[in-house]
Length: 331
Image: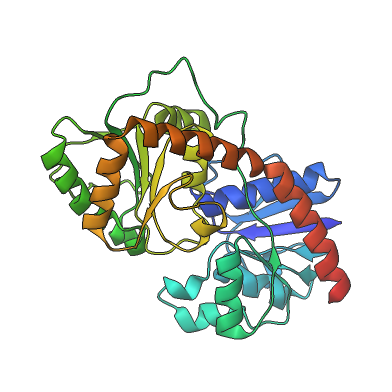
């Protein structure tokens, strides 16, 4: 099939990674795939399909296609209104939960087009809000990059966190909750080392001592996971939470909030410690448990490695290819 994927940007982040992998995987499965991206959009992933730049995503700017796979709500309507090909919508998260244009975003889920959803909770959210079913396609990790690095020393009491700024719309990532938890941790473990990466290019608002690391590539990110004693996710809600899965693949224990999609692979007490969202005190206790218990750390590390080994991009490619065939046949 001739498949066109319209996007605004492919900057570093979980949703854009999923789109990139989907494009590359469908191409590997023998489809003719291209990405249409606005001129100002950032391209920060290894895209192995043609990228067509356009001034704006409009029905007129899109080429003919057998299938369009839009993802973010702003890309759905141009594809649907173009009438230049069938539309199958990929959902990396239910946008009405966080975007300002909630009604506009919700209406795109009511269009008569099939939906691919990346987690079971996302499927439930879409069905509860719109009554629409969806096809499950679960992302994975690249085990050639996100893996154990025996040659990299793991820093005792080093905690790794990915910062996303509230001022950029990422209020739901729980950064303020994490910082409150870390204030408590720092009181108990004064030599705790906080390492963060940020893609938002803003000042990080905390009085805690921290190191801002550079991670422009997957390998740099993997080495940060691998050198840390613990990875923490503080999100209020997530469609999946790929960083927690990447951390597991690198043999790094995980403390995470019960953010929804993480439940597809995270089992509390088995391969992670899990706390309710917006609970800094409980998060601090969980962090301190992991830092202070060698046996628990090793148990979480081993279970996390086993979990991540099952979550491959190859499985995702198979699911997407099969879901596309089923969706198009049914519609």
